[in-house]
Amino acid sequence: MKSEKCYKENKYGGLVIFLLICFGLTWTYDFLVIRNISMIKDVKLSAVLSSVGMYFPLIAHLLTRKILKEKNSPFGHKSMMLGINRKCTKWLIFAIIMPFVYTEIGDWLLIAVYPNILLSKNLCMSFGITTVSVLLNLLKKIVMALAFSLVAIGEESGFRGYMMPRLMQIMSIRKAIIVGGVIWGVWHIPLICMGYNFGTDYDGFPYVGMVMMIFNCMCAGCILTMITIKTESIWPATIMHAINNSRPGLIYNYFNPYEMSKINSIHMALISQIPICILGITCFLLCFRRNSKK
View 1 (spheres, rainbow, N blue to C red):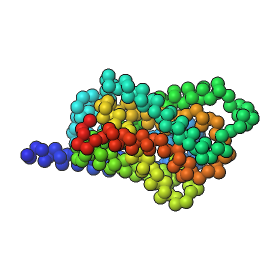
View 2 (cartoon, helix red, strand yellow):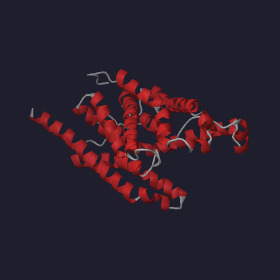
View 3 (cartoon, rainbow, N blue to C red):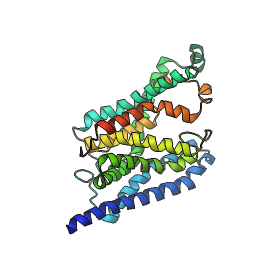
View 4 (cartoon, rainbow, N blue to C red):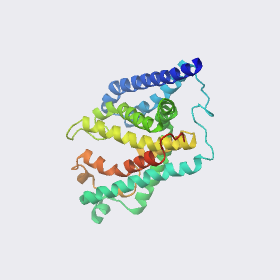
């Protein structure tokens, strides 16, 4: 009984230490660096500095394991889940394809509501947009997304690799998904307050944006957690996260930037995010049945 109690206390302690380090490092960096990043004229340096914050969950993960003297092995039970096994194959395919599917559907929903955002044939010609250029751009995005996985692993190692397993030891999977999604969304709040993701020109700024981000993180987190549980690896979730952040899709290349600038950013997000929200809720209802461990 005594050892079981100590183990439970360690679960709470590990989670608290991880969150304190993760939020402390990230929010300090956001307010000191990201807030002033627009003043940096070097585009490449700005891109690097913008990506640094994604590594803080990984750093918090490693520091927490070091503080609590937990196993730091990359593979096996209660590890950092860096292994690749046979289970990963189909989920890697799922992770690569699904962001394109739900993004494309979301873009067509935008066209259905705002038909003027689609460029005419004449404007496509004047902008030099052709089928070949669109396909080349798509290939470029896939390559960039795979490279970006080396950055996205920072968030996935922390939130799916450390936080979610501890939450699922403390509460049911469904509750852990909700709580984990809220935590992940709140982690983004400084960026929302700075206008990232939704801008600043919308009613209820920044609070509406905060709610949107938290809900989106709950839906996306459900999908990413499901993939991680099924594969016992963070790599498929990392790749899906990276591709999602690269803004995949084909029809988006034919959008009119001028017409898009007229649309309220929150309205646009509400419509375009419908498919991923439906996918997340479906995973929540079907894949994480009550009392289910897998």
